[in-house]
Length: 351
Length: 184
Image 1 (cartoon, rainbow over the protein chains, first blue to last red):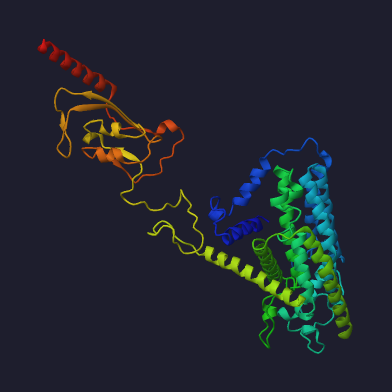
Image 2: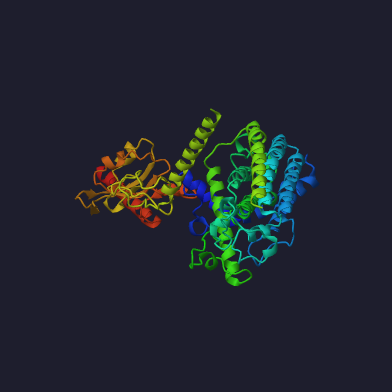
């Protein structure tokens, strides 16, 4: 979290030819911690005309739902997160619950900017939720499972699997006959197993930008028009909670995308003949080496996606509200439906 | 047609990402401000100067804070007279006789009881250094003299103690009285 904020500040600064935080700690690395301490001791101002209970509840709600989403993420083969067989659905549900907190925050503030921001966030949510669901559904169709840990296991070596029975063989590019279950590496990642998932990932990536309220889809915040959108009235530690949850969502969506499409904790190096690179760089499940490798690969991927999202954030301008709704409803939903149909048909072919 | 515009849009978005990436890469390259002779041409795109930690080198004949070498000063009051903003305040006590010689051979006949330069008023025109006959009043390369109290900007150069001032005043008064008596 703190690292993500620091990385964002540095990246933004470098893109804009600045230096970013430099004073606190080595090259400003403790700046975020200092900011957090400052926010902790700041006075919390609750507006007189606000609905006080809901005003306090909203940031807690946002934070709790986002952190709850992390509970089901399988970090490595020994640490599979909460033992639920419907982890994927739970995560989507938590992402949807977050919007209630935003709506609460906007409504309880009794401030026109906050309310406009909350309304925009809701409209945005209604638009991006369906394409996001469709793109995730494509993965469910390919993996025939909604358990995130099984989805992760499927995208690795067959020898790496501890759920051998519930998992089908992996075919490269979805061509039957190209069995690559024993090769592993990036060949068994979902995006290479089923080529039409590239389109699904494009949809997922766009919507994940919208989920984490990042530019080009930060309509609910839009500093230039709405001051700070739905958290205009918040200060001190409540504001910090909202900010923390916003960055957590960014991270959550990156890990989620890595697990669904880019092989989760599995290594990108394949086995080549007698050179068992995939096995060397992923270890065996439930061993120390296996756990550390899995952790390393998953977080490398996730941080890479965080970097890409931040890069996009500091490059592009904000979309207009109607442009976003148009993009989601007119282009992404038909595209997602088409992608779903293609992956269904493909799955039937290689069954 | 639609596909073509889509393709062009994606291409342009890629261009934008490329541009920001270039800036990112150029900024990462560390550069050293302190010893660059050409001040605003550095490697990398960032030109931020982290002021207290790194400072641009100033020419050795920089004309910033004033300094008076009081040992060489003959208290001629020229600097105070020419100062356009009246930032130099001098209180002079004449001596009955020559009591010293400056480094360029001029005779010192007046004691400086007070030689204050208010750097808060100073406009750094340099006229006082031009008129100074002994070249004791100079401008130094020191440009960072920010203080917490504005009164601290008033720099005092006189080095006479209270006792000395009273003593010299008495000497001069006695001299004047003596002269008057002689004239009568």
